[in-house]
Image 1: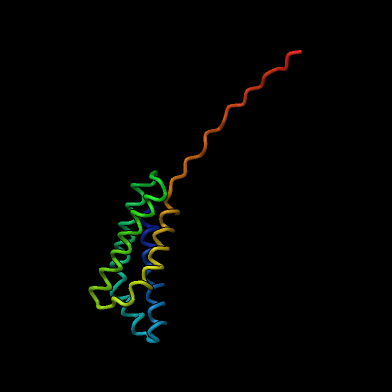
Image 2: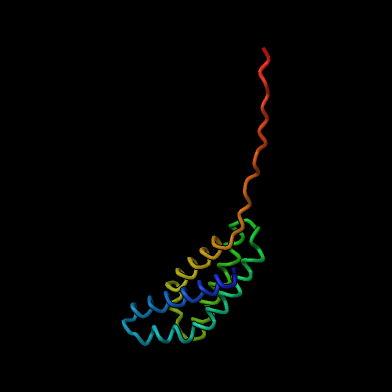
Length: 125
């Protein structure tokens, strides 16, 4: 289930970045270019991060957020450098960070608090 959630968030992340860059550039070709070039890496990275989130589901939230956000942002840096879109990295990192944080929260295992045992004592007169 965590891998599916990662893939879903990876796809949503690519679409948000593509739409944002397309609006910023004022060109629909940029949107299509980002979807075509970033779609497969986004899905793969999302699946891998979902798998990683499942493996570290009991770790502290800050550690999980860091371990999920750094590789996601790294993929954005790599793809931007590879296709000459370095100027778009700061804008593209915003939805990527949000998606990684959503994945962290969505896959976190919450352990319920222990239920205290009630003891009834009779009052002495």
